[in-house]
Image 1: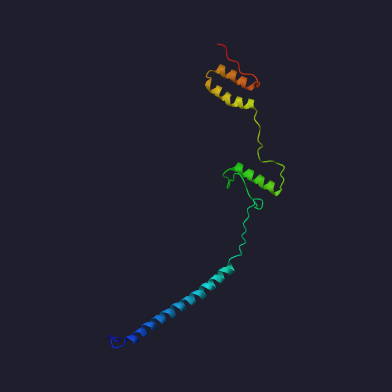
Image 2: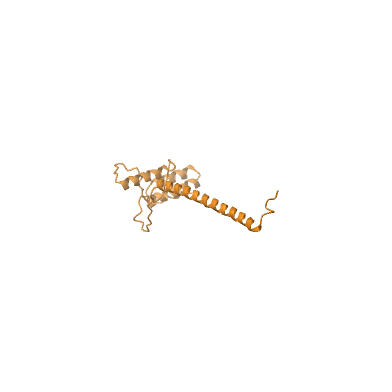
Length: 151
């Protein structure tokens, strides 16, 4: 059953080289098929892909539509969204008669002192007579200090 027993060593070497050559040619054929397939695939991808025009710039003046500050979306912070809309309209040049942004009001030192220290006094004082005197002094002039009650 072993037909190679009667063959010479030179003939056996020839058979082995023949199989190696066949395997090598098979590999070459597969690579050629893969190359053609992948080249077609690459061409199709190149046709589909848009031309990307990327440029790098170090100057900030060139950048467009930069938004600085706080952002809010989907009604999460309505005040910030009003500000965003106001600045967007301002950037686009849309003039609105009605200003929706609350202007900051300056608080005088006297008003601040009355609001902060007045609340402390109100909490500390327990009886009604002292409360009435303190409330009266808070509504009076800023430069006058509340009088201490006589005991």
